[in-house]
Image (tube, rainbow, N blue to C red; front, side, top):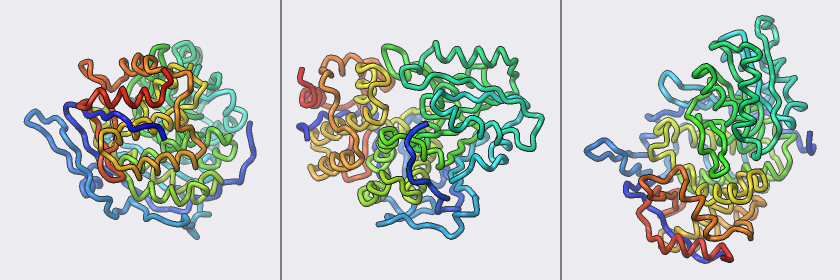
Amino acid sequence: MAAAAPSFCPNRTISLSTPSHNHNQLTSLHSLRRFSVSSSSISSRCRLLFDSNNRILTPMMKAAAATPAAAPVMDQPTSSSSSSSGVPTTVDVDLGDRSYPIYIGSGLLNQPDLLQRHVHGKQVLVVTNSTVAPLYLDKTIWALTDKNPNIKVESVILPDGEQFKNMETLMKVFDKAIESRMDRRCTFVALGGGVIGDMCGYAAASYLRGVNFIQIPTTVMAQVDSSVGGKTGINHPLGKNMIGAFYQPQCVLIDTDTLNTLPDRELASGLAEVIKYGLIRDAQFFEWQEKNMHALLARDPNAFAYAIKRSCENKAEVVSLDEKESGLRATLNLGHTFGHAIETSSGYGHWFHGEAVAAGTVMAVDMSYRLGWIDDSLVKRVDMILQQAKLPTTPPEAMTVEMFKSVMAVDKKVADGLLRLILLKGPLGNCVFTGDYDRKALDDTLHAFCKS
C-alpha cells in the first residue's frame, strides 16, 4: 500500500454514514419484493442539517438499521422459489412526478409489456453500439413492437468505447432522429453500457428540448450505477463528463442475462462502483462483498441479483434526496476525482472507468488515512477487496503529480476555485465531501503514487 493520503473537506462539509466470452448463465432473481426508495424511507438512516440559508451542512447517517430495503449480510445469497415466475424486482426512484421504476430480473427483454408501458408515442429510436447491437438489438426491437404494430422503431449504431463519447459521435444520434422525423412524443432507448446511456440520455435531453428516454443497461457498471439518477453527457478533451445535463429516464430495465456476454475485464470494472457503495454508506453491504466477491467474479446469479439490487437501492436513496448533486449526491464520487484524472490523462478508453475509479479510491483512502480519519485496518481491507475484484490499486506509471493537478483543477466538484473531495472518515460506511483539508496531505498522496 502506498503511503497515507491527504484529506479533503469542503467549507460546508457533508458527512455521510453508513459478441464475447460465454459464461455461466444468470438465472432468475431471488427477490420478488418491490422496494420504494424515497426521502421518507431514508429518514431512519440519514438526518440532514441546514443553516439559516437552508443550505445542506451535514447529512449524518445513523448506524445502518434494518429497513425493508436493506438485505442482511449473508455468507451466501439466498434464492427464492418464486424466482422462476418472471416477476422483476422493482426499485422506485422517488422524484415526485418524475419518479420512475428500476426493473431488475432475468429475461426481462422477453417481457414486452415492461418496455411498452413506458413508450408514449409511436416512434422509438434505439441508440446502441457495434458490440451490443449484434447481441441484443433485434430482441429489443421485438420487445418494443410485439403485438404493438403502431410502433415504428429506428436504430443508430455507434462505435464502441469511451474514446467515442464526444460531440462528433453524439451528432450521429441527432442526425438519425432528424432524418427519421422523430417528433416530441418519441422515445429514445439506450441499449448498452455507461457510454451509450450517457450519450443517449444527453441526446434525449437536447433533442427538441427534451424527449422521453429509457435505459436498458447491459454492463455491470451501467446496471449498478450510471443508468440510475439521470446524469447524462459527453467528454471533452480537457475533462471527463464536462458537457451534459441532469435528465431522468422513464424507466431503467436491467435484464441480468445481458451480463452473460460481458467480458471479464468489463465485469470487474463495474464492481468498483459496487464496492464504493459499501465504503461510503453501507457497511453491511461491504462486509457481504468481502464474503462474496468470489461468487460475483464467478457470475453467480443470486450474488449478482443481490449486488445489483442493493446498489440500485443505495443510488436511488441518494438521488431521491439530492437529484442535482448540490451536496449529498457528490459522495457517490468516491475515488472519481483521482480516477477521472487518470482517464483524461491516459486517453479515454485506455483504462475502463471502473479501473480508474478503483485506483482513485485507493488514493482517496490513502489520503483519508494520512489525515487520521480512518485506521490502518480499513486501508488494508480496501486494498484487499479491490485486489480480489482484479482491479488496479495504483495509477498508470506515466501519471505525474502535475498531470493529476491540472485535470483535477477543472473537476466538476471545484467551487470558487476550491477542489472538494470525497474522503472516508470514521468507521466503515462513513464519508465526507469537503474542501477544508490540509493541502500537504493531498500533495503527499499524489507524490506517494507518482514517480514525478
